[in-house]
Amino acid sequence: GPPFRRQLAEQVAREAHDLKPDLLVASGDFVQRADFASQWRTITGYLQTLPEPRLVVAGNHDVPLFNVFNRLFRPYSAYKKHISPELNPIFERPGLAVVGGCTAHGLTVDGGYINRRQRATLEARFSHVPAGACKIAVLHHHVVNPPGSEGRNMIKNADQVVELLDRCGVELLLCGHIHMSYIGTTLDVRPDLRQGTIICQSGTTTSRRGKGREHGKNSYNVIEVTDRAIKIGQHMFMEDAGHFVAIAEHVFPRRSAGVYMLPRAERVVDEGKRGAAVLRPVGGGELRERH
Image (cartoon, rainbow, N blue to C red; front, side):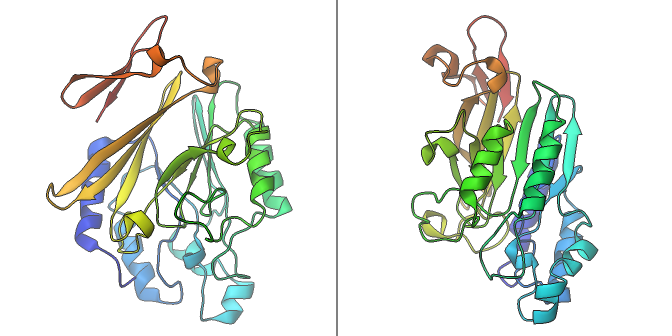
């Protein structure tokens, strides 16, 4: 849409190729207004510059606003034509299963919802994931309002979704919607959960729609999954540097490690040398991460 920052988007594409990710995830809002064909042409061309494989889900802006008939009866027609015919995509490789769910619909302008059929589909797909594999869910709408975003429309049935993720053993949730990055867990609002789910909220990557403390700013997240830990690096574009800079790193223990909280000695990150960080777990091995 009109706030699209083309030069910065090209920078994102270059950095994404440098990372050589096993999977690139986009959690929705590909266009500002789904009613305009020119915006779909812009994003279609841009997506072709990004690495594959990709897993994408629709956002509420990807549903028509002005065409009421399409909004109510054909809300995903443009998205399926230009982006992906699959509303609930899945990506699998040994040790990893990433499952997307569509929370956008035509009945509200901003809100999201996962109906009973979708919840059953998500649960069935996660139930077939081999033991020990890392389960990751991707939704557009969020399930927890981060500080500074109170009042934003998250998933209407957030409690049901949070319980489903916990019941299915989903370790990580990727989401977007509010144009503000946030790292936390569902235990922040539901301490009664069995283990909870890590939340990795995406900020705004290629437009000028950043909100709150990220007003006018752009960011993306880099996630590394190992046998013992999930590491999330938050990257923000710095005008002086001319590229995205790592501004924070979060390290969470994997459920496969058999513990929820790692002892301090296992979660200290040593800056052994410039451009590299080493997480040293007790009892053997090193988990290495490149910045």
